[in-house]
Image 1 (cartoon, rainbow, N blue to C red):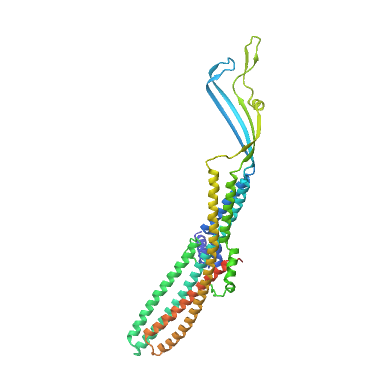
Image 2: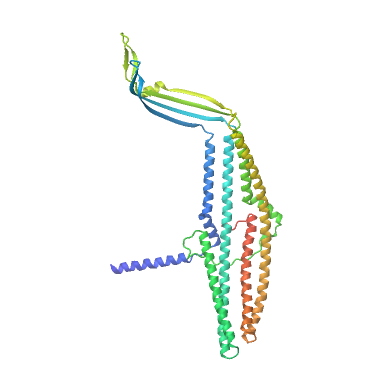
Length: 459
C-alpha cells in the first residue's frame, strides 16, 4: 500500500512539474497581448458598463410612450366619535373602511419630448460605443508600445552580453600579451575595468528588460509576473504603404474613420436634441386619464324601519358584494398650459443652448486636434525613419572602424584605451540602431491607426 501511494505521489509530482513547465514556457504574441488586454482592462470594462447604461436609458425612453398603470389600496380604522346609523347620534365607536383603486394615464402630446428623448437615447448609445472603440484603440496602442519596449530591451541585452563575452576574450588575450612582455601591465588593468563595466551594463540591461516585462504584465492585469514573457519575434522596420499617401489624404481618411471626430459629433447631436427637449417643456401638454375605484365598509347598516318607525339594523354586507356595488369609473382628458413657473423652462432652454455652443466648439477643436496630431505623427514617423537610416549608416561605419581596431589590437599596434573607445562607439551604435528601429515601427503604427488600420490584424 505504501509503495502504491509513493508511486501515485511521484506521478502527481511529475505531472505538476510538466504542467508548471508548460505554463512557464508560454510566450505571448503581440496579438494575444492586445486581445487579452481588450478583455480584461478596467477602463474598457468601465466603457462597456457605460454602453449598458445607455441601453437601459433607451429602454426607459421607449417605455415613456406606454400608458402607466398603478394600483392602490387602503384599510383604515376610525376610532372615536362616529355617527351611529341606528340612533343617528355621534358616539364613540370603532369603524373600518377599505378602499381600492386602479388608475392609468397616457401622454397624448407633451411637446414631442418623448420622441426627442428616444432619439437622444439612441445617440447616447452610439456615443458610448464610440467611447469604447476609442478606449480599445488607446489600450491597443499602449500594449503595442510596451511590447516593442520588451523587444528593444531584449535585443539590447544581447548586444551588451555580446560585448561582455568579447571583452572577456580580450581580457584573456591581454593577459597572454602581458605575460609575454608584449604590452604593459596597465593595458591588462584597463581591460579588467572594461569587463567590470560591461558586467554593470549587462545587469542594467537585464533590469530594464525585467521592468518592461513587468509593465506589460501589469497592463494586462496578470498575476504571474515572474513567468510572463513574450514570443521571440524578429520585427522588421518595413516602410508602410500609408506613408506614401499625402498628408491631406491621411487627414481626410482620419476624419472619416477616427472615433475622436465621431464622439465630438455625437456630443453635438446630443446637445441639439437637449434643446428640443427643453423647448418641449414650453408647450402645452395633453394627457388621457382613467380611474377605477371601489370601497367597502364594516359598519352596521339600516335596511328599513319596522311599523313602529324603529330602524331595522343589519350587519355589513359581505366585502366582495360591497366592492361590486360600490365600484365606479371615471376618465377624462387633461390639458396643462405652462404660464409661469419661475422661468425654469426658459432657463433650461437657455442652458441647453449654451451647452450646444460648447459642444460645437469642442467639435471644431476635435477636428483641429486630429489634423494637428496626424501631421505630427507623419512628421515624427519621417523623422524616425531618417534617424533609423542614419543610425544604420553610423553602425556600419563604426563596425568597420571596430574591425580595424581589433586587427591593430591583436598585433599590439593599439593600446587598450583606444581599443575600448572604438568598441564602446560600436556597441553604442548597435543600441542606437535597435532603439531607432522600434521607435520607427511604433510611430508607423500610429500613422496607420489614423488611416484606419488597426494595431493588430484579426485572424
